[in-house]
Figure 1 (cartoon, helix red, strand yellow):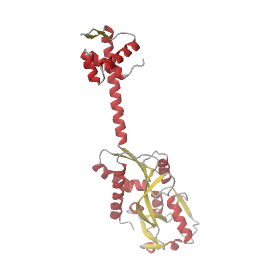
Figure 2: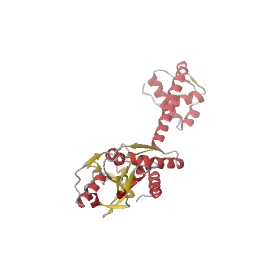
Figure 3: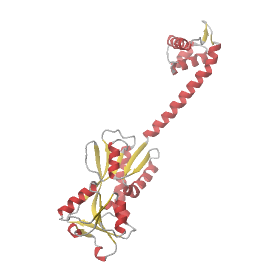
Length: 303
């Protein structure tokens, strides 16, 4: 049967009012327009729905039987429409954010908690993964935003949130390493625990190592900053990391020194896909996150 919800509503209103003029007014159409809807429905069903005279309108026996069917159909349709509408509204109030595990654990989780206290209707879904995975998911439109150290690229909107100088971390076993700063050239001969060369962080580090005349011969490659830090504490070597990693180094047997000559700073960026429309509340959360990170950096005493 190819009848419409409008035809069913017209039928129910006529059955309720027993009058075409009043039913037409309730449906906001003319009586003649209502008559057309009822005739079309009767033609499609193959039976008359109403007995009509100039003074009287009443459902036929078939029309009375069809009343229950029409009510159930419209009730199911209205319930489904309302349910899907609620889901669509809820989806519009959800924001997906990706970040590497270190940034997720030390920055983003607390930021989400504070933001939720102010804006409980915007649900932030956090996805923790490597920088490469986060970027790929933003580019594919699977994540609304990503937070990390990213390079520029086509189709990506890049917003700097924090300038983070590079530091070197050593296992805390030699008082000679307990210095506030250390030069790049002083790293010659050290065993380096590095991120893989394709990492945006490692590309910058390798550039400055080369400029300092250092060609590491002993290098261990790691995917994540968290693992780098744990490997240093285990006395497997030293590592160069952005200072936003300091929070993960505290309470570990690790010495942190600022790298100088030159001082090299990296940007912590928020990225989004230029071709994707961000959900409502995204700009508000981004502004809050930038402010939160500035406050967090001050409390953390980043070098």
